[in-house]
Image (tube, rainbow, N blue to C red; front, top):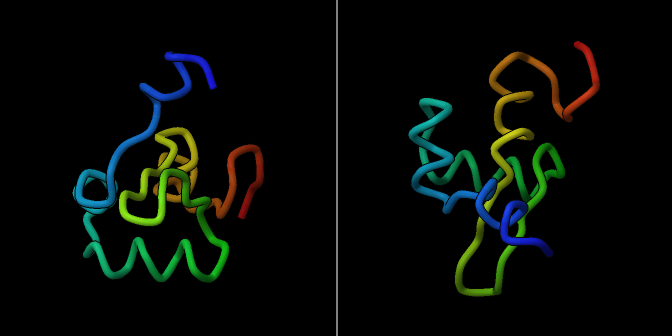
Length: 65
């Protein structure tokens, strides 16, 4: 992974703040496959582009609906 790719990922609390939902919601979405969870077993991170797509109403980047 390049440094630029790492810089585009945020921890759970920031992902929740960005979307206006709880951290539990972020974890559930990841568990259900709505968003991709990256990181280690102890520290999850989420991709900003993917979060933006969810905020716009799409479940994945490049997907409508």
